[in-house]
Length: 225
Image 1: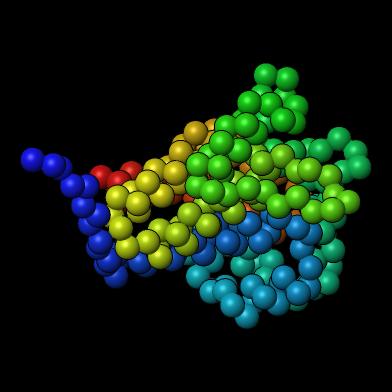
Image 2: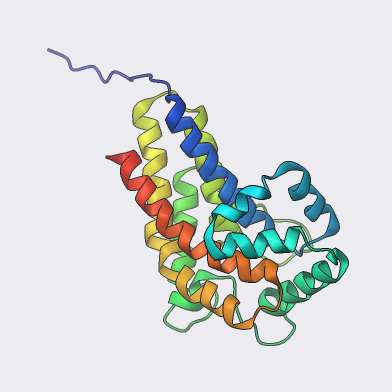
């Protein structure tokens, strides 16, 4: 008898959809704040589209972010956040919180070590690649912004996918990124931010990000069980 590989099409239930949407919202927030310098436009985007009051339910990090977005001196707070971003992640001097996994986990603590190539392979496994823009330097795939964006894209694919087997593959990809990459350098990375940031924005992000990655690992375990 010839065996036929049958695809099982199933819809996510309401609870699963809500879980993935909540996960996506957190990753989008972290990506938005860690991928580019903070601007007034970004501030307004979060103010208008985000649940600012809900930040108060997220321990100390959420309280710090709430205080930032409710600041009566927003121009000063924005400037402090922008100064932090450039000083922590861009330079021109030695970076207090380098935003690349290789710097924390690589043998030489330098860019383009083995984590970069592992993340690149993971991207390729799901048909993703970093867009190369003219007249711009090539950014390593293990930059925090790209690892967070990977999670956003795979969560979106999971929400859209009807085939149960394919959804599980997408969840395994997310689990791989969280457990074999993000979780292994977030404690040091967020610790460096906490020890060197001046703005409540980045102090809050650092506190929330480390805890969220640990929590999301548990969520993925439950989704895959």
